[in-house]
Structure formats: C-alpha cells, structure tokens
Image 1 (cartoon, helix red, strand yellow):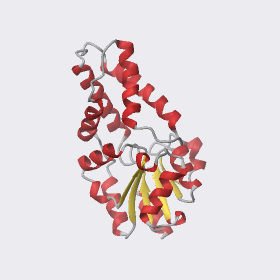
Image 2: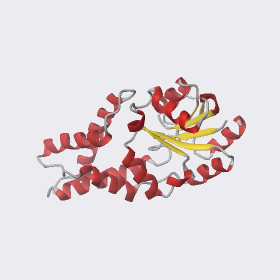
Image 3: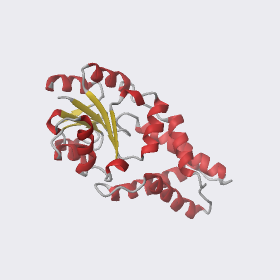
Length: 233
C-alpha cells in the first residue's frame, strides 16, 4: 500500500456541518432577497431535495459545474416562492462553506498518521476546483494533501473511472497499491473497486448495511483506516 485517497463531504467533513452550511446559505439568500418572512428550514429542505435529485442524475456522467447545478436548484425553489437568487450565489455558498464546515473529530489525526507512514495522501471528490481549495484552506488541512483530484479536473463524476485513474497517475502508483475511503457505497466503493483500488466505506451509524457488500472494508470512524492500511503495507 503506497497511497490513501479520501472523498470529502460525508467522509472528512460531517453531513451535520454540511446541513448547517446549506441552511445558512438559504438564510443569506432570503435576507438578500428581502424574504426573511419565509421559513428558511422549509426552503432549505426543498433546496436539498432539488439539489440531490440533480446530482443523482449526474453520477458517472461528464462533468457539469457544480456551481451551475446548485444555482439551478436554488432558482427552482426561488421560482416557487417568487424571489430572485443573487447573482453572486456561488460566492455566498463558498463563504458559508468556509465558515461552517465541520471536520470529523479524528480527521486531522488520521491524515497525519497516514503521512507519518510515508503514504501519499490525496482527495478524490466530486467538486469544483475553487470550492475544494477554499474549503480545505478554511479547515486548515489543505497542506496535508499530496494531491487533490476533482470531477472538474477529471471531466467526469464518480463512479466513472477517470477521477480515480487521474488520482493514481498523480500519485504515481498502481491501483492495487492504493486505498480509497468514502461514504457512498455506489459511487465511492464501486468506483474505486472497478479500477482495482481497495475500497473502504465510512458508515458511522451502520445506516448503509444493505450495501456493505459493495466495499472491501467498512469502518465506523476514520481512525480505523490506519489499522487497515498497516495491515496492507
């Protein structure tokens, strides 16, 4: 084992933090639109539903800017309520991610331990380049990664092979020498295994048990990845 790669949302940062971030995005949009009379939680729930549906359609397909997908989702909701989405919606989104993003408690410790083992530590994520760079820097972990591979750079969304292959090329390792950690059995485990990487599912609450067979290993916390890697070196 020579390299370990991580997904980002739901793997290094918590979904709880992501929800708080998105709620604050909606709050700011409503404030700017002069519609603070609306229930921001209800608007947020509709925004999440629209965004999730759009992203589900993009799995494995050629890359489309996430800024455009997210803006489209917000505009669909805004259309139902009769308000305008600010022109700088994406800038609002990035600013809120920088402010409210929340790492899993053992994320930094895990990343540093893997680097201490002499491994290449990277990210493979379905995101725009500007988003992931700004978010990692705000979290203070940008310099912990030897490589960052996005769907924007690869030109495809996971589980398409290209993001994984590009990350392997950057690290200069073979697929069998690399491990990938993610929280989505269908996109992360299947995508990694299809190119020959070892796949690890992070499932803290064992909510995805019916899909565990898609993955080589299942862990409840990031720190468990260290022992898996030690056993494969």
